[in-house]
Length: 393
Image (cartoon, rainbow, N blue to C red):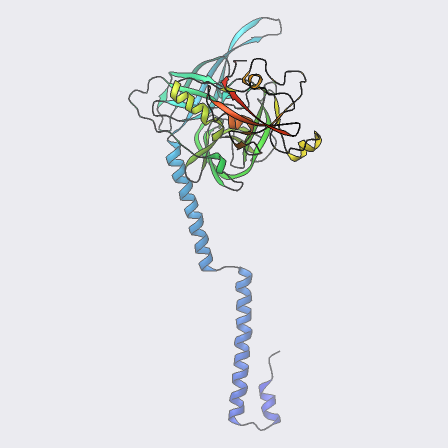
């Protein structure tokens, strides 16, 4: 409460010096009170001009970075339009041919027109493929060089523009997906919904080592995909086959699937998983997928506990149930692998949640010999296998 200064002067005789002292004390108190109110208001407003300016600079810098990534990588991204022939049976049992249209995304990996996309973008029975570059240039003479086998967990296909008509393409820069961490910023670029070319979205890596069962809209065609990145960067229909790019402008994944009924849960194949395939296609002009020939499950502590295993990481060759654990005549059989073996390393590379058996093998080419470190009944063995081309079915 503010003091009654005049009443105090009437009750006692006070020297001028004392009055001045009272006035100084009073004025100081008012300044303190006013300063406290102003300080409280500032604290409540939570506004600091210096901090606000700093935040604006950060947001502006990030926007500029994404814009630059979109510009640099976007020139290598193209939309893909596909026509596929199939047969339909009407209610009277008559079979008639029908043409289906698909749309997706791809990106350039060589100046001479080699493109990578998803296998499901160019399904079996594809009759024609055309692509449109970011600048609007269209090519109708596009060849399917090869697709990974239907049973493969790598949903990948390679295309080739037969005649570039003197145009020079700009390939993307490939990154190292093994260095990716949860929380890393990423950008997805793609032909959203098959009609919005080079749509750019951003987000983070939400997880890695994800295994999912993907299917088409009918729910009939399904495939098991493993060792995927999870991201919250928006991925829509038509984005399949497009690049997932890090802040350095390097492709670290191929967008391949979304989680239905969820918000911004998308999946991408780590680029390291297909570097062996890329190398083969660039060198030979055709796709040869390296093949070991085992049925396995990727171990985690929980799975190891359920199976009563002491080893918590690796590729566990499952016992025969509805199919052979070791494919007859395969590199795995020739190397001496058996069911219930646990492959823990390939050429010294540990198989874990970030590096599955498939992803490590995919870094090699057909004809390469690899050293397998195997746990068999608690004993460590070293075996050698020469990788062969995967069978067509």
